[in-house]
Image 1: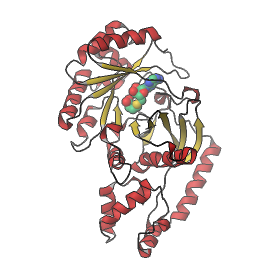
Image 2: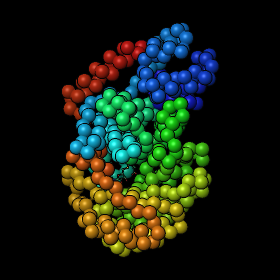
Image 3: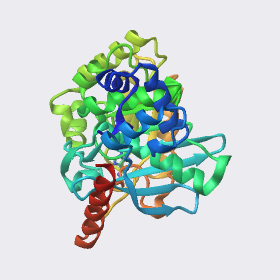
Image 4: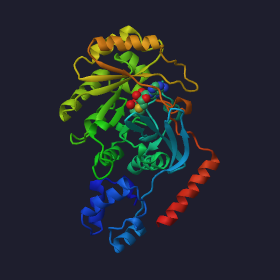
Length: 364
Ligand code: SAH
């Protein structure tokens, strides 16, 4: 049993099944997530008997780093191995006063957004909660090794590979660990779940699940949006906006952020900006304009600076808070929409399989 992905409730259940008191869960959370300890033998405030029992029955296994790339601007991208010879990408974006970790929720993606490179690799499977939280755990260890106490993870965004709202069983315990004071202790506004518009997913998060919601809109009208985000045929813009309203109402959250990738000649004209303003008039919203990031084989180009500023001006004049996302880490293909868990070579696969077998042998 890998304890890395169990939130407080999950760990309490685990210990109850082993005839232990619930407070063991709290101890474990701090050892694993705050002190970064993966070896039960080092958890000195547990009884020797319990430590031995945990060593024989459980493990704390995070994805291994297959490759680490550091951009000229300090952005770090990791390729991390997950089971089955797969790999996912995780990105750390340092800024003055904060450090944002962008994590993946699936291997590949099934939504086929036409301007996203993750779509080109197809869909393999959902990540488990230990693979999702494991990215945070591993990144925290690597950042500590590289920068000591100088840098930390202050924000986490589910904006890597995959659609988090199609993997709620794993995303919800991950969110709970990110928020738990005994684990990562991040405030709700510092954990963002980004969705392409899975309406039942937005509704399916319990009212108690507090997080910041980002919606990848990219177009305000159904016809254009369906071409960019095929999921729109299933959940059209009107329904999506209604779900956002329910989200804001149920949680007293201040607003929803709408991501809008700026694609030259496709969705970046003044009439598109005006349609967006009309669409968002009934909902407290912020807009984040993302300059399109190219990838091999795409027919699209990034909008001109002029078009982006004009778009921003129109939405601002209507009273919306509109920011332009800085492109980070593009020299290492770490920017939005550029993440692909590159298919592994047979040799890389062999290495991963051997590592996994070795770890399983240690764990069992
Ligand atoms: N599936 C979720 C999570 C992925 S988030 C979602 O769609 O929200 C990744 C963000 O990057 C999304 O807003 C996505 O629309 C955007 N994106 C995808 N491809 C891009 C590209 N080539 N250039 C810029 N942004 C892109």
